[in-house]
Image (tube, rainbow, N blue to C red; front, side, top):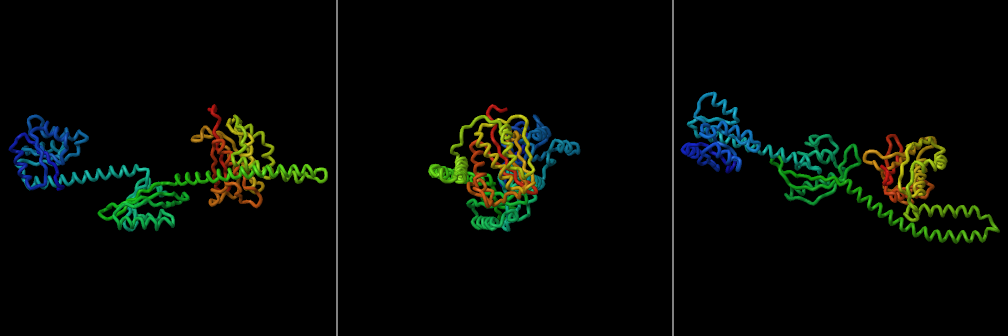
Amino acid sequence: MNPRSQVLLVDDQESSRAVLAAMLIGEDLELVQAESGREALAIARSAPPDLILLDVLMPDIDGFEVCRTLRRDADLSQIPIILITGLDDPQAKLEGLSAGADELLTKPVDRAELVARLRTITRLNRYRQLRDEKERLEGLIDLSPDGICVVDEAGTIRHANRAMARLSGVAAASDLVSASLGDWLDRESAPKLRRLVERVLASGSATEAVEVVLRDETTEGRAAEVKAGPCTWDRQPAVQLLVRDITSRRRLEAEVRHRRRLEAMGQAAAQIVHDFDAYLDAIRLQLQLLEPEIDIAPVLEAVESAADLGRRLLLFARKDAGAVSRLDLVAMVTGIRPILDRQLKAHDQRLDLPRAPLWIVANEVSMQQLLLNLVSNAAEASEPGRPVTLRVRRGAARRRGHAVIEVEDRGAGIAPEIRQQIFEPFFTTRRHGTGLGLATVYGVVRRAGGSIEIHDRPGGGTTFRVLIPLAPDEP
């Protein structure tokens, strides 16, 4: 028996209670006595015992009714009950079992039988309580948003929750049990986590968190922060791991660094363009002085191309962005249709516009530049004759309240290693080009309070999706 189990003796006869108490001398028990059924119920409700020895024949409430009352109470229904009766007939035993008793003993009670039954029932009750507590604990662990798992000395997973299964890309937590945790880690993370488990087992204390990459067949990998502490599993030393997905946090940090870098480059570019314009003005002045003697048209054309490059650089740098106004995106696209046709003359053009206006608040020239840059980029990415699609629509579901611009090509796609660089100024993969097209797009989108996404198409091709908030008075 577990130490200091509490047993409630219930009998209206003091002598009977004394006999039972004497029989239990030497057992490591705490005995509590009640002389009536009502008192027994009051004691059980205030301090539930581990077991009740309950006499059947009592004047106020008999033992059968006390038993039924306890079984109807959700908080007390699991208390083991041994009924003690002087009735030695099958009907009394049947009624006792029907009332919910775990055992029935007939007076006079045999001490050896009483102690054996009490020990067995108490042990079973303790086991049931531990099992229920384990189930409640596992339920709480399963609800945790963080991955939790237990690994043994060999790094084998012994237990895992649903969040851990989700992070590992498997259908159920049971799919992880008996597998090696290293199977779900990248090449650099596996030895790092193995060393972490070894340190915990050697020191018997928790360690500082380490970062690992969880991989699966459906994603590029998830960045995770792992904390480890010692525990016991199946009576053997083990390590409990708390695994927190920090992929979104790392992406956000990378985005913040990217934006700061672009802002710094934009500020530097604005100053360069300011000085550049001054040099161009001086060149124009000198050309005008030479005009009667030589043909300055080709040189002026080059100067204007340089000036246009400066204007695009300023647009990226968020300088000279121009005034904003309510702008019908559909009408604007329709208005620049001839320019789009020229850009896409070598391709299968597909234009998809809604009939109803889509009002946004933006600078019209900047939005035109955004569209032309995206379409030009798609045309250059696609082989002649391949389709290029420009689609404008109202956002749905979580994008409700936004105008959506999609430019879709059927080119070779964007290599993962350059995805983080394509919006940086002067970055280009083409032999000819300034590398300002997508940088300008990025700047325009940010000024309009929108966002931009890149999606690869199955079978090849890329879709640039721009989301711009609708004007405030739009439904």
